[in-house]
Image (cartoon, rainbow, N blue to C red; front, top):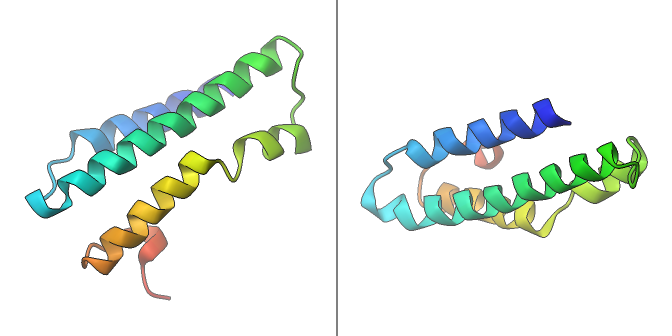
Length: 93
């Protein structure tokens, strides 16, 4: 969990350092804020695993997947796609 959380945090750091065009800056900021919230939720879940309050498997998945913050980040990615910025999730099939 610690490695997973650290990698997520590193990815968000990389995204935060990007310098998008002015028209996309606000969306990038929204994405980073939402992603930081998701990383914090993963970090908290990891601490609960270490403390024996949460077990891996379904309980962990139920806690860290489908987070409101992750859904916010996905909405930002879709909005970027509507503006012509293609990023994985919003790429055409």
